[in-house]
View (cartoon, rainbow, N blue to C red):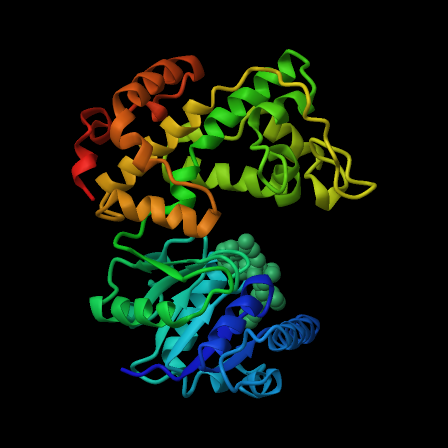
Length: 390
Ligand SMILES: NC(=O)c1ccc[n+]([C@@H]2O[C@H](COP(=O)([O-])OP(=O)(O)OC[C@H]3O[C@@H](n4cnc5c(N)ncnc54)[C@H](O)[C@@H]3O)[C@@H](O)[C@H]2O)c1
């Protein structure tokens, strides 16, 4: 089946970036959003983006910014917008009920072959599809932010998705250009919380919470902990990034994983305190740092010496093995490649192939120390059997 008409629902942060890459791949695009203001902002973002790319000679050969914008249509009526759609990519607010409603409406009002793809970061694809009468046509298409710059797209199979629908989703995703390197598409074979990348890094929060709570108790300044946690080459220190993203996002993610995977993910004391006090970081002007005069410049010259970075490597490798055990992917290489493409840092698996015994020992020790059974090494890591799953 040939995909020509793509409809994008939600023209916010993600929707406008997804629209950009779909246009650059040559598809006809219609966007739908409930907010006129957001639509205007999205159109402006795409127009200036394309003009900049045209000046730099980065648009496809013979294509102008104006021609790109001509292929971008806006329709505020959803039923009308999807009547000739081959693929609908949904990037509306992260609300299960809203996504289920839209999925049902799209499937009822679009051609039989139309595929509904959700860009959700946390909601199960099976759940999103459960109210529509063609769950075989529903997939996840999880872009990373910003979609034009981050190489990864995870294409996710719901419990009832047809292989053929997955094939089309993967094929379309591979056609979408990335402005920073080659697009990488990961096929996610099972609909499990966090899919691949977010899932593998999620339990690092358990160790992070432990360190932050310990530092708070010992009255160690955040800057010293930040110096322990941060990579000197990263664009922002770890705690600046935590403030930038928002402590509410971290809090809600912890509750989500606590409900779906293990109660051990419950938010720590410091995180709960930030959430309850409304010290959410940049958006409220204060988190770990004061943001009232712009981005903080923490002094990272002195370390607290509380953090053992090997623990993060061990926890992520263990979670990668769980992802393999659950059948989310079949190869540890896909995990590492997806993390590099989605987060710009190396994944944990390659290192674990030769160090799994030591990492397992660290996990035994730290599961005791943290009082968290969840970070005990799983069978696949302990035995080293994952090494064969290339
Ligand atoms: N921001 C990220 O880093 C990121 C990364 C990956 C995935 N996601 C996921 O992408 C989705 C969108 O996130 P975002 O950050 O772009 O949010 P956003 O708030 O910037 O955009 C959401 C848009 O959806 C619109 N909307 C709400 N109801 C609608 C409806 N009924 N019909 C059409 N439009 C509607 C809103 O007006 C808004 O413009 C979420 O599911 C989120 O979990 C976000």
